Amino acid sequence: MDLISVREHHARTLLIHYRWDVEKLIAVYVEKGEGCMFAEAGVTLVGAVDLDLPELSSRVMCDICIDDVPVSDVSKMDCGHCFCNSCWTAHFIVKIKEGQSKRIRCMAHKCNAICDEAVVRKLVSKKHPDLAEKFDRYLLESYIEDNKMVKWCPSIPHCGNALRVENDEFCEVECSCGSQFCFSCLSEAHSPCSCLMWEMWTKKCRDESETVHTKPCPKCHKPVEKNGGCNLVNCVCGQAFCWLCGGATGQDHTWSNIINHSCGHYKEDGEKKAERAKRDLYRYMHYHNRYKAHTDSFQQESKLRETIRKKVLNLEAKDSKLKDFSWVTNGLYRLFRSRRALSYSYPFAFYMFGDDLFEDEMTKEDREIKKNLFEDQQQQLESNVEKLSKFIEEPFDGYPDKQVMQIRMQVINLSVITDSLCKKMYDCIENDLLGSLQFSIHNIAPYLSKGVERAVELTTGWSTQAGCNIRCQTADDQANGATIESDQPSTSGTTSDDSGCSTWKRARKESGEGGLIDLNLPVEVIDRID
Image 1 (spheres, helix red, strand yellow):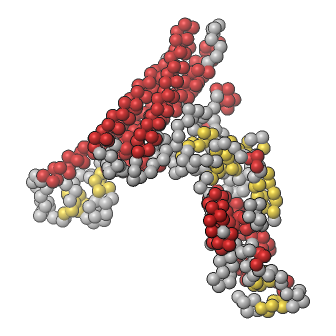
Image 2 (tube, one colour):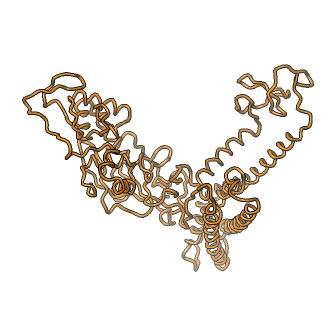
Image 3 (cartoon, rainbow, N blue to C red):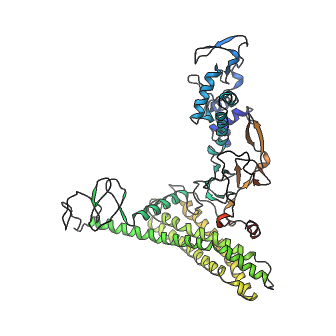
């Protein structure tokens, strides 16, 4: 509004058109000029149009319904077109019901001007107050749904929060409800995998699990399970095929063979295909088994929190020289972060050094060199993660002080080493592997020693307009990293209660509920949650 001297609804129309990308809007303003920018967004310069209506005593004809109506019953938009309020209202109601509230255009033929939201709100609220509220909600949600830097938290059930990042959209964030996710693709946090790699990996895992005891129908390609001894199998689509080779056949068969079909003869091409399929399966199983093993270890180690707390309480109850046991909690959280990074490094390696994505990016020699370099770092990290896990699980609460001190030093040293190795592995991935690609771009979330960045709730002001609460962000609301945009006002950094809450806002679970472990909280905060 200040930069280009426009009214509020014109500023919102411009921002919605350019998907809330202020830099892009300013670039168009500088390169193409004000007139072109306004025309593309459907904004009419008010000064260029006569908005004065005839005298109140006169009547005018509406060009839509062809009725003569009093001047008091007509409305003129910024573009200069004037129609009766009944026609405008009917037009607005249709557009709102169709979900086009964000950009309701003028009714005039070939007019691209966006209607004044104040006029829309005023006319619709007289007949349908509920639709007026819906209109305001659509305008408000545009800031989230059309803005690449703001997204809804994907938690189920939905916590009602939206998160905004300030700088890079390729990052991993944690909502105040405890949900951690990739901001780019809204799936679970999966670095060092890129979003495409993770999407392909989850699909492959799902498909492979279905094909362990099934084979695809050659006609409809749906998985078919064999439930008898005969090798002639029938799909629900009606297609018969041979279970041994997967080829389509007829229905006729004898006790010994399928009529007009023989797959027992050796074929060199078929043998090569079978060998390649077998090799690909073994390669997939190699990476999947290690990914699954570390994922299972992570799940088991997640149960250590209560065990660690009991050990610390036992040590504090003793007459021990040791008073500070934060090293135990810090070591446990370092184990969680390192284990998770190690787990997702196997799907990354599967695609980085396979033929699915980067076959034309590297020669076989380069691929082998880079693969060996990466696997060396991966194995170093794996070795130290296992050592850290071993020391964390030690029953040190029953050891003498001297032995506890030795374990303490091991845990602290291994925490530093695994953190350093994680950084080194991420640097290798970003610079030596993904950074050297020429034909494709894969971005990953950066490695953070403190874990996934947790969003903080904004301190917001609210203005009331036509009975609808609309958030007004102040200049002091800017924060580094991710911020929470809740659909309710908040006080003292916490979410308000459910009174006056919109119907689609669901109560969110406490972050400590269900045994979830917050990887970013200090031990004293966890104690308060418990």
